[in-house]
Image (cartoon, rainbow, N blue to C red; front, side, top):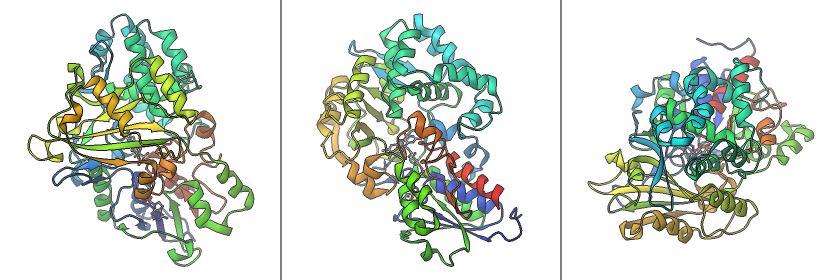
Length: 478
Ligand SMILES: Cc1cc2nc3c(=O)[nH]c(=O)nc-3n(C[C@H](O)[C@H](O)[C@H](O)COP(=O)(O)OP(=O)(O)OC[C@H]3O[C@@H](n4cnc5c(N)ncnc54)[C@H](O)[C@@H]3O)c2cc1C
């Protein structure tokens, strides 16, 4: 079943086994290439891995925890991953956002229920996300490809763009009458690590909000590693292989100089260093200009009981956004972006054991929480994260049996792509979405070398679309 042109190498090497590396490997193996994935770490999956980080019997997600983009990915949805052990679990609600009045705004699976709960802002919510919910399967392939491609559905995309291009705060202030809807929108937009006053900061909020209704925000049974585990198992069925504990330090270590089509599931900087003189100086300079984003500071908890949220809505949701009102979140994110310390950060919390008992011993729980800190920050944010937890779940600290703290430096030690703690593969502002990391996107000046990590379009998230698009660019070339 080879699709290779005459003269194409028969081998493919993929540097890195994150979801994008595995996606590229799957496409190439399926096209008949002899495909090998080389992974520096002892476990596969990059930032989509599950590890025993605290006490015996507790399983924690090193990186991603909740997976709307994987469940809604046009590529991953085509693969028979369920046959390889992947099972999606849905909490009753995708998201809750608690507020100072001891209630929570809840983003429900059902668009109609959410519209009803948002009261005077329900109609605006439907206007903003309804078309994307209704046409998810048709629109998402357009959204998860380089922005400068001709879209398949230009009219729908233009309509989406009218909202998406706006700064999140401006759009929320214009569209919503209540603080509740504005806070919900701010928590969704802040996933982007952008200032809520930056153009296009509304885009992530709209995509994640629509995904909640279209495909849900599910977790994989057993943890995020079940996604990459299933991908690797399918790859083995298709004749490919993964070698662990194999850090690639030079391209020559991959065999003959021009023998393999090589994909880099790495940062652009690392690809530049590995490629050495195979890139012209002008391209190497462009790669060097690609900017990393801010960082995450993460804590994984082993808990004696579920998080004791005051607002009942939080006890039904896979994810909880902490930080209060739109004004509070915008302010703390702005301080973080200026490189300042913040004591009341925006915090993302996932609580997988409410739905998946396999992740902890009987009646015990795990929780995953991170906040945004400046790139490479060495500040200890545990106190700030737990102060936010205590604000909305008094008594939280008494439930903690053990905590595992991951500073930006720890994250990078566990996955070289998380440079300085940047979990997005490079800042996600509009300039870097257009030039990710250059206008060539996946292709490089060397016809055998391709970049396939989240530093290419569409960017961060477990969806495999960077790897899928990169492999298709290689198949078109070869
Ligand atoms: C704390 C955190 C929370 C997140 N939360 C979510 C979430 O809830 N939902 C979501 O969808 N996304 C989330 N993400 C983002 C998501 O995990 C990433 O966008 C995604 O994993 C990127 O995939 P990738 O294949 O591009 O790179 P990665 O997953 O980073 O994989 C890169 C791999 O390449 C390997 N590598 C690098 N250099 C070399 C080398 N020289 N030789 C060999 N191997 C090498 C690394 O070891 C790593 O295994 C989160 C990320 C983090 C860190």
